[in-house]
Length: 179
Image (tube, rainbow, N blue to C red; front, side, top):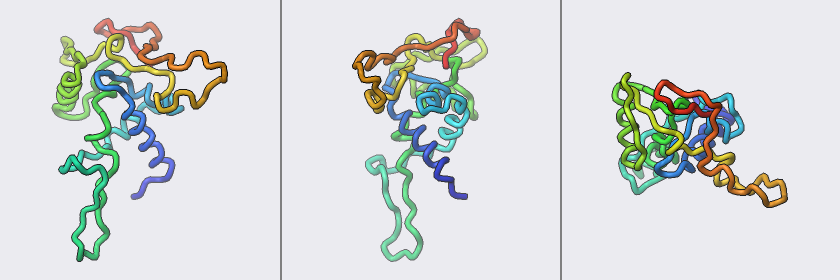
């Protein structure tokens, strides 16, 4: 079943926003939703990531069409967004924990984050977590949108880069909980 225009817009917006998360930093599903103007849609961010296609087998091609020249069938296009160009691993839950999505998924995500320089710890329950205070990325606006909604006085531009927003609550590991 084809996606609606709204669903297609949402998924593309999520992937584009995630592409802006710097290497070595993480953010939450909820913060991506907030950056897109829909603070009550963190689960939809997760659903979008769940449906992120795998990277093409040929890493040199971003968008390719695979079909034989004499084929009468429609060529199958490799999706523009995929796990090779959308850093899915940089999005974790609001508690700073890596969400389990299947056997070995959290461990794999932790390995990819560690390769980027993010310290991923394991608690006594075997849950993987990241210290948002050190590795969190919580800008007020996406870097690609900075200056687009200016109040005209030139002050405050660039604020929020690396800023952490918390309501003061902490998880069982003592880390602050974030939006």
